[in-house]
Image 1 (cartoon, helix red, strand yellow):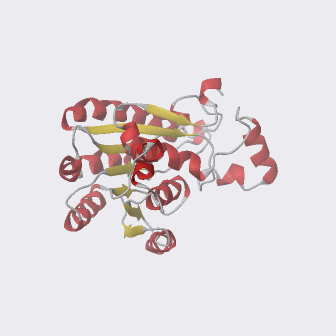
Image 2 (cartoon, rainbow, N blue to C red):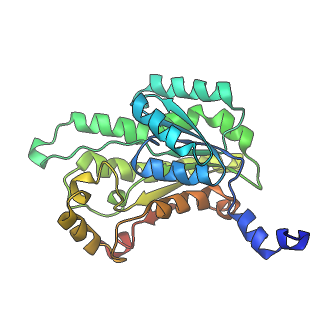
Image 3 (tube, one colour):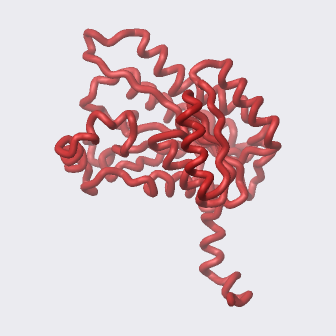
Length: 272
């Protein structure tokens, strides 16, 4: 049996510092890849988590799987357009009176040689990667404000990329420029939302197992080559990105805003 002193000792204080238990969170694009990794971490840490995805079957399946560890609600919706953003924001407002954590993760990419690169790629990728996170954040402001306090701000966490920090050898011009845009959008929103006790930060992941990286990671030889370019010598694990998100969402991260955190095994510091 744990004594009162043990329950309130140094270990309990540190656990409380990183706790997100009881918070309401949204993870867009949460049915797979980095979004699923973050959603799983938040569910296991005691959050009630809403995940979105375009495909209902995939969204429902991931929510069912994660519900084995806690509370995860499927919200299939296409956030690539304003109508989908409004639909989801209304859906959330009907069910919650506060939103503590908003993770803008849903994204798209498009690769092609520069002389064949279609201009419509910029429209699609920027709409999903930059415009939708801004639109959803603004639409969720009433719920974020309701959850916010100076001691425990509401949190917006945008998912950028190391490709928005350093130049990639892959020809995905709309993607890399959009992720640089996500990083600046993060800083700009952080400045204007700080007086309302809402922090806005970004995580810039390196190589993780996801659909966007499938072309390079499904083949063992290609995977080994990718890992060899990472100073720490490996591909990112789910706990790596989930841990960064939990830190930013917890009391431990309450004094950070406008920060871009590379979770990349050292790639960005090495300049690739």
